[in-house]
Amino acid sequence: MRPTGPKLITYDFEKPILELERKLEELRRMATEQKVDLHDQIAAMEKTVEETKQDIYTHLSAWQRVQLARHPRRPYTLDYLAAIATDFVELHGDRRYSDDRAIVGGFATIGDVRALVVGHQKGRDTKENIMRNFGCAHPEGYRKAMRLMQMAERFGLPIVTIIDTPGAYPGVGAEERHIAEAIAANLRDMMALRVPIVAVVIGEGGSGGALGIGIANRVLILENSYYSVISPEGCAAILWKDRAATPKAAEALKLTAKDLLGLKLVDEIIPEPLGGAHRDPAKAATALKAALLTHLRELIAMTPEALLDQRYAKFRAMGQFDFVVPGGNV
Picture (cartoon, helix red, strand yellow):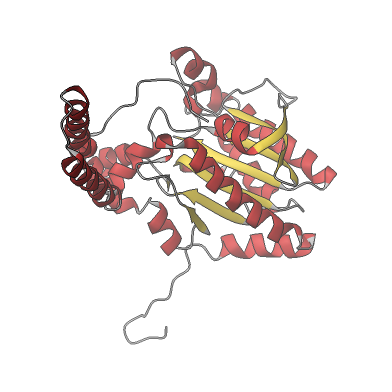
């Protein structure tokens, strides 16, 4: 699996790696063209490149992980479905207004598990991004998702939701067709579905647009994805009135996979290839498939009543904390 699209870009924090890789390529070319034995030098440079990669990619800041989550070559929902599922049949329309192409959904087989898969979908080029609305769903997208999830419940099939959106579309049309009501209805109705639900954040998890398909028994997240109530840029604009404060905002939001796991907002971090899922999409897909199957099999063994109780308790526990009132009780 190799997503096509924009040329593989390099971020500022990756430039030391790029420079070392260029030097390594020069050494290899020199050894070939001049027939010189540079085996030791090449081996030493290869070691330096790998050590530099490990050092940079294992110490990324929150903002740097946001940048990787938005990489234009990062695999999207349909890329992962092509790699991990068979027999995918896409279904369309909310039966009320139209078909929102920012959300795709249909039945598929993942390993030995037949399931409904619903997820956000971005585009690879300008034309497709316009069609997909840059992964920002309208109300009809969330209503389509709910229609399909209720269909899965009637068939007794588990549900997988794949989250990758900057947020729900904030335009006039979305407001006219009640975007807030559509998301709120999904939060309510997903909580009551009597089948297993596994949600996974594969890139951006932006605000209510992400949560609109994010109510689940298990919430997973890829290592370089983020999940947040607001974008770092939006937070910086509100709190600091300065876009330059975006990296500071990203740190303050605690939006990385590691932060979210510590806060018990997600259940598992799915590891990515070194440098991000776009560096080795096939390896990323393999890890995603393994994680999904593990959680789906565990949940399928539970009764509908146990699923409902577990899901309700999971979200009720979010935001709870212990505190001490001076002179009072804990």
